[in-house]
Length: 152
Image 1 (cartoon, rainbow, N blue to C red):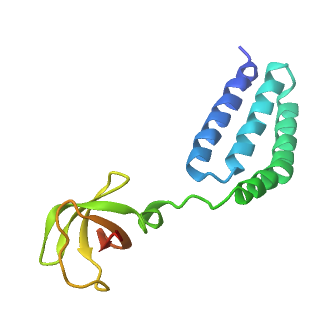
Image 2 (image 1 turned 180 degrees about the horizontal axis):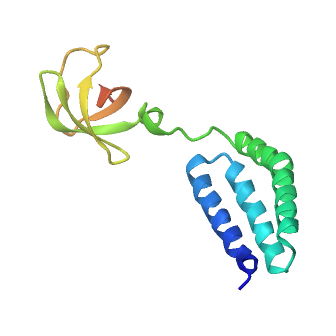
């Protein structure tokens, strides 16, 4: 049994792994390599020699990386602000006090559903917010959200 007749399986696995990595990185590099692997898969299915498959996939990868990827990145950056992630996405987010504040600390539920330990920002007057009061996150310090009452 000739193992090279199953080269298409290798191309398929490489493509799938690249697509999964791309979902995590979101920078289009692995998307281009995954697409080049699909080209290698097609070359394998058509019966080309393994070294021709590699050359075709490498050429496709280079073309995609240097011609298509820059255009996609340019289009992405033109379309608006890149979505904030992690702690950056929480700054400015609205929420609601869900547990009474005691000695300056309490609990809030943010509009995205996250529940955070919170403390009142030193920039506001020292009045603990009531349960149900609307708040806005001004900073994240460790595992604590620094909040201010929302403007009415």
